[in-house]
Image (cartoon, helix red, strand yellow):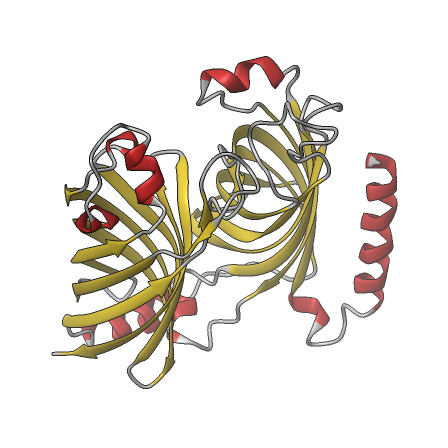
Length: 367
């Protein structure tokens, strides 16, 4: 398979090279990446199905931003790209393989003459070949669906070999799960080291310092207030059971502290009808109010014009579902879609255990 990937890599390379004189194509970069990692056994039951390390590769095509938008300069002209990822999960009988298509952004940290430091964030859809089913794969107790969310983080150092040829190495953290819409859903968490070969059809450059300084000098800190209603779907154990549709309402106050970041706090009220069976299993006399949970959270957003990557950590001050603990978190995307209207797509978790994928619609205003 890796040999076929190399053929595809050089095929795309030749096409881009032929058209690289065009003003569109000479902004692209192509990369071939190989990773070596392992599945974290965050539940003791996972130990028995993990047999080997995870060997994976991906091929990427990225576009260099040109600095014509303010956020391009603020993030030192980041790269936006798409990638195809493929991995052998180390157990061909029960875990099989996974393939993913994802979008990503590479944000420079510091650029030097021959070495660049950066971090990357990616998200997409992963397809598993061997997910749980009652007929022929009851031992994959990690994931019960073929389609899953794919999330990827990384830190890397890129070294320039020739004028347009570079190699990078770094650390990656990859996660895929279905957000509990189909059980089981322990998910996979895979740290890895990687080695990547790049060919760029452009010359890297730093944004003009004067442009960045002008943006910073004209910046005014703002407060933002919002209300968001979100829905999701989840399933309780055992697999193939009843579907439940949790709802969440979030009242939030944030402050844009820099042009790239905003921090905030929020009050969350969750209504989750799936809690009834989970609480009854704990031999607690159920009351309707126990379908509700409430908490407060702190948040940090990376802002890219109208889109932001949000990270939230919260604590429940009212909950009867003790198995989930008191700490919850969210990671995902938020976007302004029209005037004061916003939308969001987030994964809510309890530490490494996914709770639900939430899609939200909201209203925000500045003051």
